[in-house]
Amino acid sequence: MADQRLYHTVANQILELIDSGVFPPGSRLPGERDLAEKFGVSRVSVREAEISLQAQGRIDIKVGSGAYVLDGSGQLGRGLPKVGPFELTEARALFESEAAALAAPIITDEALEALEGYVQDMVSGDDANDGHHEEADRLFHLTIAQATNNPAIIYTIENMWKMRSEAAQVQRVYGAVCQKDADHREREHRRILDALKARDSSAARAAMREHFTRMIEALLVASEEEAYREVKRKASESRSRFLLSSQID
Image (cartoon, rainbow, N blue to C red; front, top):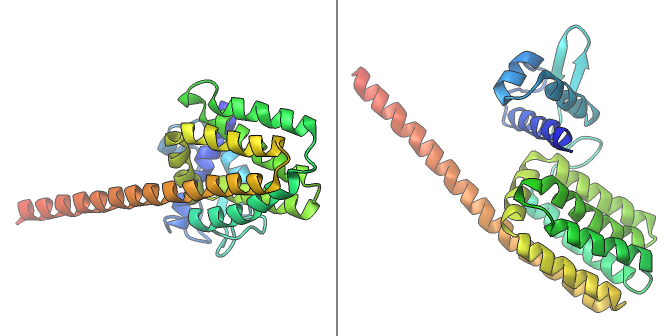
């Protein structure tokens, strides 16, 4: 699990460099050794990250030549649209609230038992086990989608989770929110589960909608904090350049 998260992190770091224009479409990525030194990881992790990016349609690996950046404008890979954290959360609130309402009267006891386990997994262990918590969160929501017995709903929600895990910006902001909101996560998922156990469609819809409403508010705070840090970083760089130019004069 740890190795899997490591190459996933490296892939997202490379994507951030691509999306920021450091490596524009058509350019060749640095070699595996250079990237490994840059990110402080092994060449194996870099290789696995590049294979992942090739599968997403973001780079093309040419044997004996290297990895080249593809034009991914408008796409997140595998036909998924580029979205920000707010757009994605709005869509999830819409689809997953109705999915919970639809699943409530027909969800099986086996599915409810699985959901109970996922809620426990979300809060078990320590903060260093974020990957374990995130996987439990993902399985909780996908189990509800599957309980609807509607292939179109299942497909839609699965793809929204792909956007959440493959978009570097979305994953970064979501990660910041989830690390701070472990208590909220347990309470909100518990309310959703209780409504499903009661076979109450209205309560399940309301609990799921409340979960995403609170998440949107948390995303706003996280985005504001990130923007503030970026302003401070740029101000610090400007100050350093000014002091350097003053010394030269």
